[in-house]
Image (cartoon, rainbow, N blue to C red; front, side, top):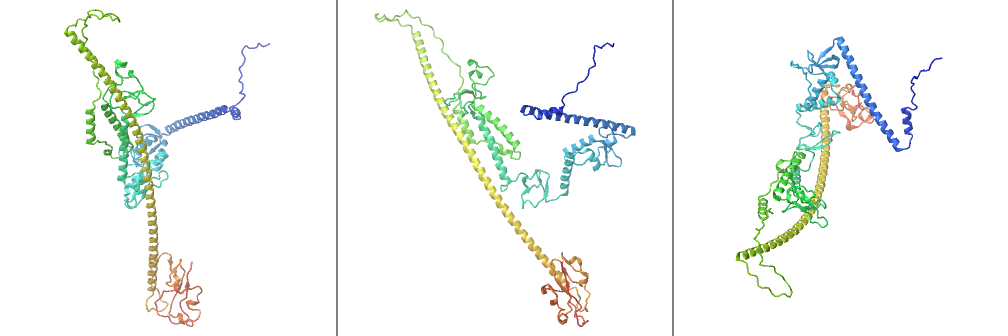
Length: 597
């Protein structure tokens, strides 16, 4: 009996479900979470498959390149790139079309083409350093140029050819390479681009979008004024603060930088320097709990406003100049008049502002000893009079009392002045807030109304100009048609007169006509050889009668009247010869020719 081994062979168990079955099961579920997970799984699976396919394609390409290089080595068809000096198979390289060809790899040629596009050039010359003048054929260019580079080079070449052509009436769109033949700018100042990707109507004078009926100078001036207004508004906004709580605007005239909102129900306290809500500990006054290096509690408000206005002006001017490069820089400079400067100087001199004065306390006076305790009792007798101190002590006591009284009076005056100043600032801030809000709303409304009126006026003027242009074009078409009709009539008359003079005078009939010049036949007319000089109009059929001056003697049925459908006004006498002798019972030699389409 064979012994059983302690180790059993490991067998693999087939999976009970496949990926397809799992996807089918999740697709049949009604829960949104499972459906979302299924969609995420499908998307992730698609991304992984795309990456795997890309990696496989890259590996296959690398393997193919390696095999191709090995075959080239075996065949001896290895060449050195004239640019990067690398060894490549010749079937992976391109060469110039000179007598002595130079080989280059495709990567170097592609980089050279990209550099040429960046330089707005389209010539792809040989990169050899021996002075080769060769270029590259189209079959060679297709090996290293993709569709994007080909389109860029073609566009640059087209623009260069148009410039070299020197067409005076050629006009180009300033926003795309589209070009067209246009009349002089005095007749039409607008360029209408017909490119599907562009389609912009531009001004041919300033090369900007159309602004007709306004002139280029008016538009430039308006752009400069609007840009200047933007700078001025930025300068005003630099001086105006707003409450962090109620958004009330205010401006500080003097005092410390700890600002308290005067609006009822707000009373927010914030810093005038950084506009943060704070208390005294936020500032640099160490006596009030602050730290050195923090925002200053006191400073010159005029200097601060001037610096903030300058910074805002420079930032706004730079921003406006970048957004409007065509605006004249001189229009963006803000200059104040001499009167404004004088008023500012006078106001600064009249209101120097608060100054931080050191606290001066009076010197401590010497103590004057009392002669003895004084007791007050209701029924006690009046004490003996206290002996007066010396004169120096009395004088010092009087000075101390006067100084205390002046200090109290000064404190009351200072408190009253502070209250009065607070009320005045509150009223001023309220007026400033209302004025700023009302002025802003009125200015915005006025600008909107003015812009709407200008737009309506421009639309009316454009419609009138288009109607006038349509009328002029219709009149021109009518005039051209009348001139063409008159010219055709003159040509027909001249040709008919020439036909009358083709037959010589006095020649026996049938006369041999003079040779007819085909170059003189107008369009639509022809002369068949059998017509003996007869002329036919394919647009207006008529009858040509070879007159021998015997039509009256021909008898009935021989004249033009006997021809059905013949019109006498269409009969053309093409001969001027004398009558021919009668023959065949005096029948006319000539016979009618009826022309038709």
